Amino acid sequence: MIFHHPQFFLFALLIPLLLYYSKKRQNLALPFSSLYLLPAPSFSLAAAFYRFLPWFRALVLLLFIVALARPQRVTAEKEYTTKGVDIIISMDISGSMLAEDFKPENRLEVAKQEAVKFIRGRENDRIGLVVFARQAFTQCPLTLDYDVLTRLVKEIQIGMITDGTAIGMGLATAVNRLRTSDAKSKVIILISDGSNNAGKIDPVTAAELAKTFNIRVHTILIGRGGLV
Image (cartoon, rainbow, N blue to C red; front, side, top):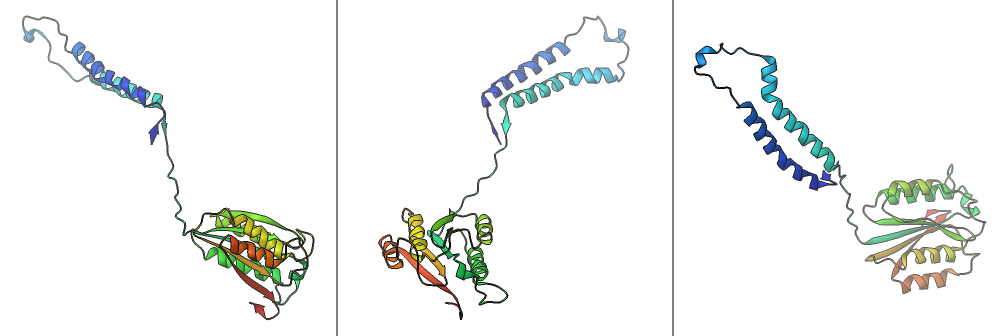
């Protein structure tokens, strides 16, 4: 807990003075020649309250000072220690990914399931997601929020982009996401089921770009015969 205005605690120095003044007032006595002339004292609730009244006032004053100081609760901040690995999953969502080589699942659903398994198996590595068909775009930038990333993977559908298979564009977009990263290791996982037939950048050129920025590329071919 912290206080927004700790300077108000200076007023707490007045509390001992208040107690001293109150005690001095309580000790004031009338002069009597003999105490035997006074009746024997008896317990009185009012007298007891009056006796502890200065302490009650001091407590109220202290609470008032604390309120003026504005106590604020500080929540603990989570610190993440990364392993120095940035990963982009670049996934093909062209129409051919609807082929049911893995009945009852189609290629895209199997690819999404494998991507989710991969994400859940990582720890403290930043992971992003790129999807491509005739064009490519970033579905999720590099993040440590695996729950959000997993949800975005599950939401991928055929038809989000005009049909086609621009592998080079999918790879180049992933490279663009990683090129400014200062991570010790940068990796692209390319998931596709076919050959390049669209896009302004061919796969070879995109692969050379990845090499220029020290980015490793791992390709997963999905289709007949399973995952390769």
